[in-house]
Image (cartoon, rainbow, N blue to C red; front, side, top):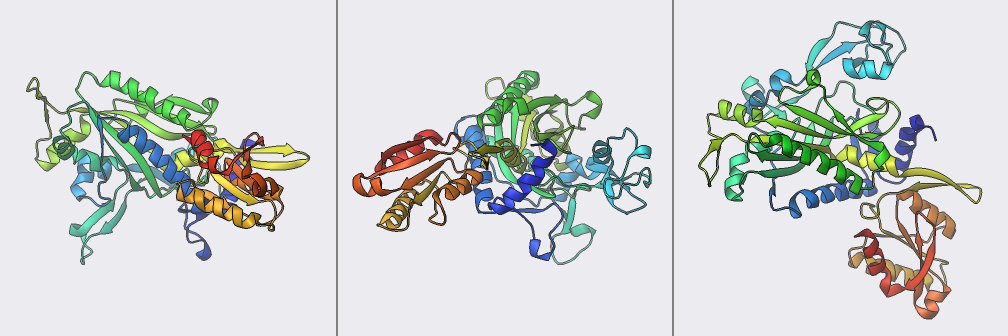
Length: 450
């Protein structure tokens, strides 16, 4: 399968199996806004829960937070977003489509704008002069729509963490170094969105800001860089499709001392020759706390209780996209195999992340098998094992549907079940089958998804 075909196949599978739908599809859709269906919402939720567990529940030095989407507009002045959060925008004079310059050059393969071909209409070099475009969505708070009522939909979740730094530190009685983690929605008015859920206008971030003493930041940066790519591997993402990409000094954000991206190879037109960012690790120094201290007039310094030393902590940021990690898992898991002359589509998701864990099938709809199968299905649900019941069509076809949906195990109730209480359990990836007692199903599955 050619890599450039993968995204098209994923879009089709995602709709067919209930992972992702285009937003407002019955009205023609909304550009680069997507809805997660019954399986998609479970997969993304499992990704977020795995992140939260590793960041917050398994550590003593990181606290959780859920800050508001709407914040005081001065926050975005202090952060630099009003002045700096802009991209150069150009318009094709032929078709009047608008593009971000860097994405246009990457997708057209041109080194300069003058020789860049419009990816929409194919005309070369017919571009307006670039102009700066702020990516924040603007709205109004209250009944009057004037400049005094302007607020913004947050373009990142990090600022909510910074303005709550002292609140969390004092109430949780944490000492530096410690972190604050948050999962939440962010919004960017992207000029050139696309590539399915990779670049959207509404998305979820999984961010952790780790506050450290100045002078120790380089060591912490290296530790978090290795820790984060290790976590990506733990999700089952293939090592040969992951890499760390360093930002050169002339490409660093205005707040950053150092920055690396964890990139995943999607193929196609995503990113740099198919490599797209799924998480960023940044050394933000004391820029953010310093700016908020300046603009708010409130002292945000940390006082070391042992030495009474007062300082603004440096910040090591880890910022992963929940949507992009979910898309990477779909791309990583998708494969096509020929089995007995037929093509089998498999979504080989790690069992711990798969939306459904078990498909339950009566071999035939007679002799009490359907009722027994439904009873097993309901029992698994009560035990917290996501299960799907299917009695429609040939058993092989039912297996194939669940293979494509990513369900790791299939349980078949047959004549032997009615005689001795054993069932056949089938592995999605190997298609190997074993017989176990029906009361052992939850334990068998639980051991393999732990």
